[in-house]
Length: 382
Length: 121
Image (cartoon, rainbow over the protein chains, first blue to last red):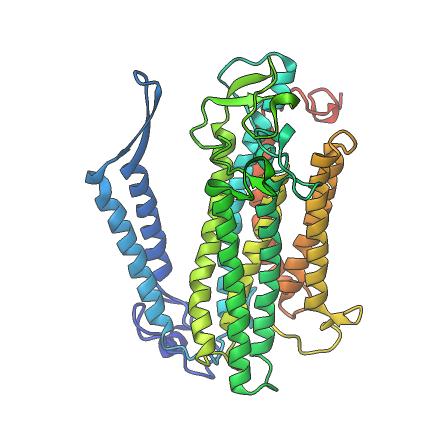
């Protein structure tokens, strides 16, 4: 592979496109060519293609419901995709294995000349991530502006039973859900259903700060090795704990709900989105426009007469779960990396000369936080 | 997130820049949650437009704080080129949003006069 007259230099740097890179200090450059990203891209594509073939959903006219099937005969492409993907990761890992972490190769191409090459790579990765979330947001915008709002539709009196309309997740979260007129609000000014999302928002902001503190501490040459290892490990462990908290509250919000106390005397009561009927299968969601105030505050009372309608809200639910779920997957990916980093930190893996992996992980983690800055108001609050 | 080699970038108003940014983010997140809570507790007194305005302002401040200070897109020698890199997808986002607008059912009906045929004749 030729790089415009620098062939000889590159042969100095790298013996093979598959084997370990030669990260020899002082050459001023870095190995550029690797098949690993292409392998991983193909593997991911095959996996996703296989996923759509293995798991299918079809409408059964006779039964009048969606039926789901798993086609085991198609599982080969799914497994092949996974195998290619992990082979790519292995190649990547093997190439990087020879890197001792204390020397950062510089990028040679314009406009990134003299910038650490792995930092450039990380930003390229974040660019592709931006496109992923941008496509999800544009989908959300398109459908949200294309569908009638269920509430407005009901008020217009022009609705048809079973009609598709948009019932935003904020109806269930920020406004107290289906029983919003009797929504439980232990804090008075906000419904209990908003608590998990609000806690998660603060958790991500705090975790962004703890990762910054981990990097600052790792670079602090005034600390003894033992003290530095302990502090960096604790900051990373705190970040991991906050990420875990985020996913736990996500599960609470989606599937579990929470209640402190019991029945009408409950201090906090927040039904899950699943319990409230906000699911990707909600083709016949019973919408209540006005709640019967005399129906009791037991979250099981009746909708006021003439105030209910059946709507198809699957599109709103799907965009919510896909977008927030994709973000959740990114949090989980970060947790896997953090788990490794915590162990590395307590074993003395980070020194003032070798802390870039915390810096690069921090960029990813801040990006995940940044996405949540957009997801939270757009999907939870508006 | 790299460390700075010169003084002046370490502090904001005399405070450690990371700690300062962290507390700004915490305060603005609290404002964000309270603003939405107002739509619940003061449903008839606070309009949705007001809340959306607050959410947009808070989102811009928080996004800037995270990108500029935590991700170091401001103040580092390589900040400019990395900021340009980070903003590159914006082009595609603009194209996507444009198509969202053009494919909206009401797109043709709600176009402003200056965008309609015959405006310049």
